[in-house]
Image (cartoon, rainbow, N blue to C red; front, side, top):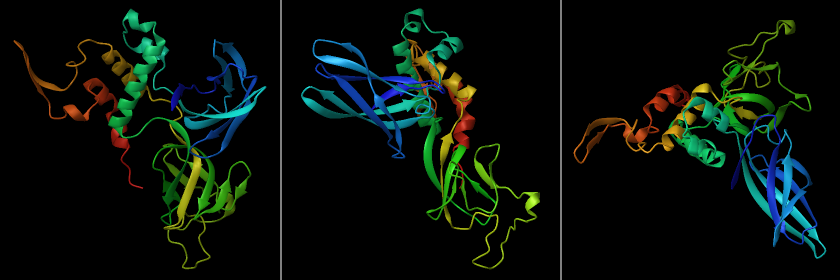
Length: 307
């Protein structure tokens, strides 16, 4: 799967290589996780070589508004007929852009001009942080299932930015775009972005009961106990936290240093004359940089939640 770095509110160009005899290239894009249609259109001719032609497709800002894995179906037409092809692409927001890395840390001049190389190191740092934290800082369109507890709040496994649909035991009870609303009260995402709360508006003159009446027909203002609520929406992080951005830049700086094999590696003892190195017990559990480990420690702890 090819990775393309995206940016919020900016389009993205993806290149496609077709045969030399191609006259037109058309495309359709689908989200691999949600199976939803994303975008379609005609590719724009870019260049030709001895055996191939290059075409560009432009993803609009709606298509690049969050991290996603997509399938691009191409149809190439020529005087001989039509042919089909598929390309799988991952759209990812980097944890630190090349510009921010150069602002945050000192990069050797030989590497600072090589933006392609710095992007590869950013990916390496990003995956290292994800592995250490046990999660990621992407913004994604997903569906999560949580269970009600006869309370007016349900807790999310990760932050949620927008609610698109809610299913109660597979029955659609809320849809943002079509204004389907079969719940008793309005919903609100709390400030932490990890809980959805049912609001009890005073104008309704209703009271949310912590212990509902004993009736199969009476469940006002609560998420019912043991009912499965599928939450379809935009999950994750609206922005990259400053600590994660700096941690990414520091790891990239590490990768460019000749002494990165021994520097900031939780070394407990180091003697010279043929070297006698003793590592600390937690050497294999961190990112390899103590400063980075301290920066991201609170995010690792926050990943463990009881739902």
